[in-house]
Image: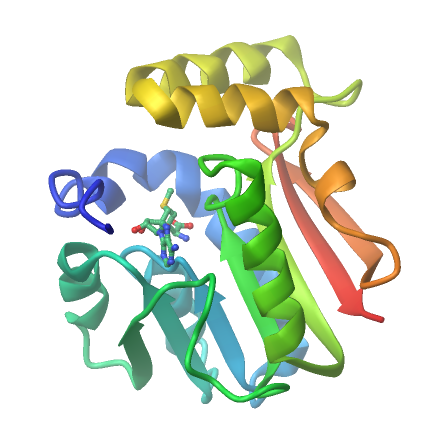
Length: 205
Ligand SMILES: C[S@@+](CC[C@H](N)C(=O)[O-])C[C@H]1O[C@@H](n2cnc3c(N)ncnc32)[C@H](O)[C@@H]1O
């Protein structure tokens, strides 16, 4: 478990730099008014998003991932970010520990049960009225064909199970079928990369 990112860990940020930069910036802008809130990034990878928040003086930052290799990179900084090697399906935090949770590019590459468990866990971890920010692919009438082709190309390169789960995610209408309206209310949506990536902000109901 948690080994699939061992090889790409070192190259993840440089490889995806131009693709990720506008997305990371947009997430920062969404959260600028919450600098002192307790924020948890689940499946954080290299911690790149929280490092950007830390540079903008966010003070209560936490992130977790299953891959020890990728977390070595997340830990490589002088920023005051708390880093945990944990499974996002079942974490060791108490109920309602966080004001904001982030799940970025982690849902589309998982089977349906795991996706649902990630969402359930984040609901448990959020305080009442807390915010869930999800970054992931969106394929709908707004998404440009240019974006669809680019994303499919990248996901095909990842191959295997990863590509199968991506296709299922798209066929199941991505986030809209996954996030239950009695648990979370969509409050804002922003699109990036020719409208192929959604930055969706939900409030815990
Ligand atoms: C595509 S990367 C996204 C990383 C980061 N969130 C980003 O936006 O760049 C997916 C990450 O999810 C992590 N991951 C996969 N399954 C996990 C699980 N059950 N619990 C915690 N992390 C997991 C992987 O190790 C990997 O770092």
